[in-house]
Image 1 (cartoon, each protein chain N blue to C red):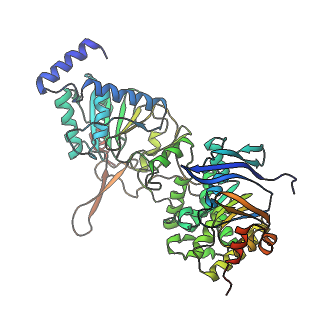
Image 2 (image 1 turned 30 degrees about the vertical axis):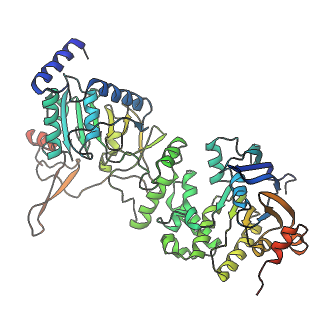
Image 3 (image 1 turned 90 degrees about the horizontal axis):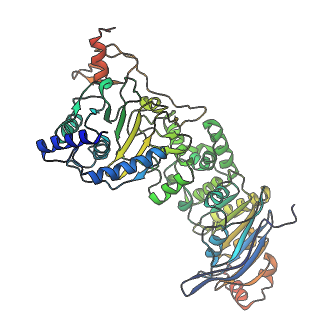
Length: 294
Length: 258
């Protein structure tokens, strides 16, 4: 980032909104950047940081917003999605927040964005080396439900003592005949750290593996940041006789006909009528614009 | 059998503030041997067990364990990673309350399989068949394998805890009052099972108990603790039939026989 331009932009945004560029003060952003650098240096490791109050409640994406604020530059093009859609409440509000406080250009097109903040999805359009994805994370600790003591989970990470996670998957198979975990599906990063991919559907897990884009994860309430540097190997857990599998649908998207994207089931009436549509609205719109109706 | 012991401790001492929990305790344990540590409440039995198992650091003295491949290792000087590895492979620890040693909300099969998965077992079918095998070894019906221990009786929970410890075929098991808290008939069956298992698997064990009957049934050797000091050691039958120290005499004479 080139200093005079950045400063000018800070001033421009400041004049309009009376906020510092991207809301947070510069010292806070530096603190968050240091945490991010550490997180990138140790892929999958949860770095504690001094999470700030944001003007919306914990659980609404405060962690992701702080990470976005810390890495956002005046020339970035921001895209914000919630469950794959650009026009849901959480996405609309966070996008408007950064339009106002940073004055950056925003987009709904995945290919145009340089920074994508997301809740619950990874875009279908393949990501590139020029992009950063920021995830909003409610529960950064994948072992939390199994081992409530944080002193103990930290020790388990330190010793790579992860048998317990497989106990959870074992229980899944025992109860449901298959691994029923369908979102927030645990992964091993670079053969070392066990990591929660945030509540993305397991359909998106393969997109984490060796992704060309930098992936940053921010948990505001839990005060943790972790990261996947570009091209980091990410493996989803499984058993030899019950391997990791992603969701499949019998239907195609009712709007664009896609069979390879993650589909949402939409109830259309009270007589059992339903349709399946792409969860990624930009992907769906793009396909329709190209006239690929099947 | 090896000529050397499997576990040896020398000059162990532990204080909690001014209170003496252990003072100059030394012992040796051979492969396949069961040693009972008896004494009244507060005599330092449980502290001794925790120190031997590497869970509590002694103020003085050392505990050494003869590993399978690397010879003698100081239990308290090894890294935590190495000690945890021992804890889930070569050692077992049976708690007095099975709730402390089990995951109460996951199925019995997962409880038994946890150690295997921790060691890298990644084949669901094989983990299950091993779990079923060990449930049978502790005389539990493998059909209960998918039930959580919450639905088990006290005696079943204790047997499940034992199976969970044995699945990696440990050489050394620490037991803290394994049968207290169970009613007498269940106790008798569990003791019978434990005696059979220690013989069949050639397990070395340190059993802490306040119950002299348990000590006589399970152990070859016995050690009597009072105020953190060893007052008497010897063959179990010898100590019980011909106690030398006044405290041991008192212990033996206070056993109630119906």
